[in-house]
Image (cartoon, one colour):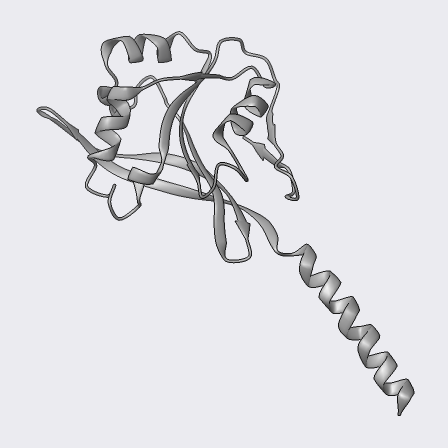
Length: 174
């Protein structure tokens, strides 16, 4: 009988250790922003974001949505003239939406430090942000909780961006 209790306790403790390793998870997916309007222009086009999310159990700690901006995209109407000039001067320009539940645990500055290693520079895109936050789907997707930036890479190097937060698996930003 004592042997059975000892075996049960060993199994219980070993399972508890395994469960602890799965509390922090990362996920990758897609997010589509459909259609847009600017002044007298209206378009039927999707802006496709790659989505990277860091969870602790069921709580979202950090969320990143990144979209490549094609020079021909109708969503370029959302940029001011200066923002569009900056975007077009980049070899690789992307839109980044960033959410953090607690910046003391995972901060935007830590995210940008790691992207800088892949030669991405943060760019303010205030006009684009205003248009994005007024999109009809903005409230349903809580865009008000996200910071919005441009990411500019001037050169055509092959460096990929790797993001690694403490106690999470690293993520490669495509």
